[in-house]
Amino acid sequence: MSDWQPELYNRFRRYRAEPFEHIAGRLAIAPDATIADLGCGPGDNTVALARRLTGGSARGIDSSPAMIEAAGKLRAGLPDELRERLSFAIGDIAQLEPRRRYSIVFSNAALHWLREHRAVLARWFGALAPGGTMVVQMPANESETAKLELSRMVLEPRWASLLGPVDRPFGEVAPPEHYERIMREIGFAEIDCYYRTFHHPMNSPAEVVQWYRSTGLRPYLDALPKDRHAEFLGAYGERLERAYGTSGAMIFDFKRLFLWGRGLAA
Image 1: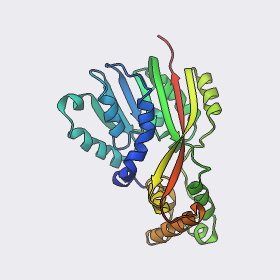
Image 2 (image 1 turned 60 degrees about the vertical axis):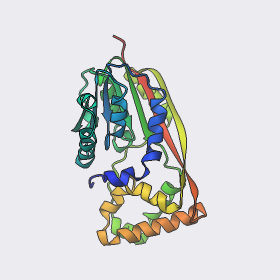
Image 3 (image 1 turned 180 degrees about the vertical axis):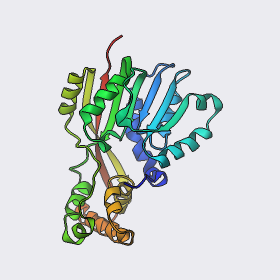
Image 4 (image 1 turned 135 degrees about the horizontal axis):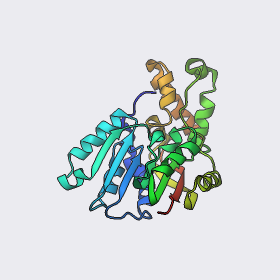
């Protein structure tokens, strides 16, 4: 799959920040914490976490060279003291080394891009220092109008013949009770798994298309000839106008799943 486009992803920075703000308001961070931000993207959340430290460190890891480049540029513009507590690296977050070194393992909108969630969560559990906290957020929005319309559209002969088999690198996002069970089996304590829906005002359904263009539409655009991208996006926008019943202002409801757990005691 093609690399991410940080500028396009950040077009809706304010809305994408809301789940992080929900987490940050609850997350206790010791001044000397060691933090892993898995799937750190352009680094904004990693920096926000590092600002709450007076010692310790925050390390952002992402598989996207473009995202890590953007994060590196962000880090370069920070004050020396903050920059020294912060690092970024390209890496496979599914293969985090289980060395019990992090007091916080944090992952915002990344786990759903991976398969075998149980195995991944087990590795993240192994990376937690004694008594450390893991918190994960991922979209759980498959039943929302835009996702349903996309699923229907790509099956139409007009597009199916061009798309062929599309590699969708998404793991299945199961209900909260599924993650609660497997986290308990892995060994997590103080488990809390729940949905929360965020309500994003949009100027039009066309903005929803742009929202997904930087994330869920990427596998389909990769599969299409570039000279058909505009046609595909336009057709998707038309479908959304019909489905939402408007070409103007609307509320885009986005459901997300939060997973909290604590590692083994010392």
